Image (cartoon, rainbow, N blue to C red; front, side, top):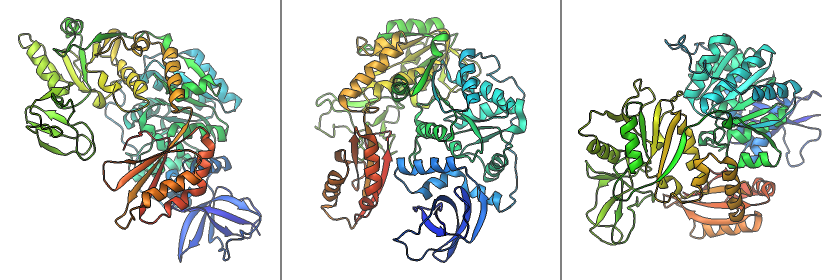
Length: 626
């Protein structure tokens, strides 16, 4: 009698049941009993023999039919292994509720995704051209029906979207199915609108902002193989596509591809594995591909395609950040010369500035989380962007009692004040930048982390003030992220325009990569330093978050550390404190990447069984600080 391992969309491992059938039911939806209730689940595996450790094995109540291919089940099992989590937790990602409603014939009110009034206006993608050789390479790879990963160094985000559209359109004519993944809902809607105008019902989209009825309609089309192009954010990767021919992922280094909820998967790594298991090509695009992805291309795992150098780009100019004022004289000249063509000035933070004590040199920080406090000069308040705590500006330094506390660094408010003083006698408009601005004339101000994308180059000049802020962030990827920040905003600048970066240390060797877009030298520099300091891609990092309950013993943390040292083959860093006193974390680092994951899968239940704690795990963490 065959036995079957079934995954239920709960925080559970697989459960074993039996059924009088010799048929391989892997990927079938079934209903099974569990604690006096009936639950729907998916068959993950078939066993020939009864598990010795289980006495009473129950029988399936009902079989609904095959939902997932065997390759997709293997993908879900890999997700469970790699991210050290229960298969039931992974199953929640797969639109299981909508799938079961479809199988059971439950009719929901179907509501089409609303169309915008400007639907028929010319789309910004219409006039863009793509590299035909790149297009042909990808199409031929799909025709060969074999797994291969392309890493495309793209010139801009609109270029990536146009490449996606052209390839998906061609594959549709060949009867193939494409999955197009973008990091932001706005990007998804724009690409969907462009494709929908041409291919109508054959295009669907999937993102977290959709209503339940819209999501159900989309899943229904995918289940019936009526949707040939699926455009979505990261969770579209788990849609039940029957015959997937190609996966394209735009802006592959974008941090939005890292899920914030459990399991904290990375859509890029997951897309590569789904392509491998389903035997279809995967295309990764970015204007600055991640160091890890470039390393994989150097090792021959990815095929690198340089489309960036095929197109013109604005000139990058590095100038010294002056001590007595905000703007370098050359930057100030360009502000005056080109304000009618549009100038965008970027500040690294909100508010007026940070505050530094002149006596002890300390920057005022939040006592709760340790983040630098933002000073607002008009209101005389300081606040923490992380904790959202606000208070009055102290008269004395909280560290040394000194009375000389001065603004340091530049925020959006400080830019306003400076620009108003400089141009008070000239009729020059100064305003906050929004991607919906129609008339780009004057000087616009924006904060680096809040700039919304425009798909068309609008400005003649882009200025980064106080750029050293980005390089000072305590992260091994600080240089990569800083360079990426420049390139992510460079598409706002016309190709004959200029990008100014103001820094206290223009002689720093990293800026030689920025000046001439020397990407290869940049990657080699980063890889050299990461290898020396043991950071990815040369090691695997895992973050183990621990929250202490009230009944936790005093020695619980030390006991957990001893257990990790005895059972996990890795360097154990920590415990490190988080912003809350009852929260801490360990960093596990190992050059034997697979062994680390295997050890964690083997011992995770034991770690979680320590009394007095909650435990969460994050593989390939975004941040190594609390």
